[in-house]
Image (cartoon, rainbow, N blue to C red; front, side, top):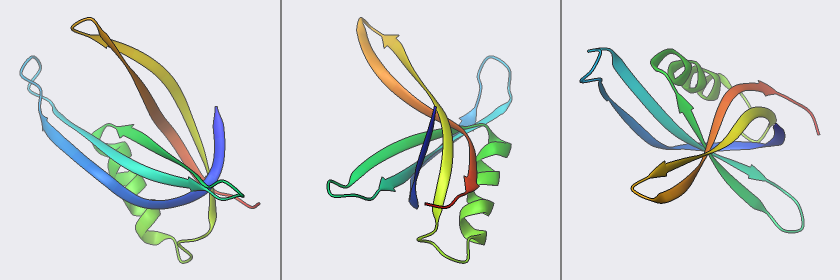
Length: 98
C-alpha cells in the first residue's frame, strides 16, 4: 500500500539485543500527517537497525520538512495472549509531489 503525506516526526525508538540470536534489533515509529478538510495522522513502524538509520538520515536531510512524501507500507495483525493488534510497517519512503 502507499500513502502521501507529510513526515512530521519520529515519535518512538526501541532497541535491544535478541536473546535467541544475540543480534541487535531496532524499531522506530514515525508520524505521517495527511492534510485535507479532515486531517488524518498515521503512525508507522520501521524495523531493522539499518532501515531505521536510513529513515533518520532521510528525515534529517529533508530541506523542506513540509514537503510531501510517499510512504510504502504493509498492514498486518499479530495475536498476543488472545488479543489482536494491528501493525503498520513502512518499508520505503521517498519525496513526492501533490
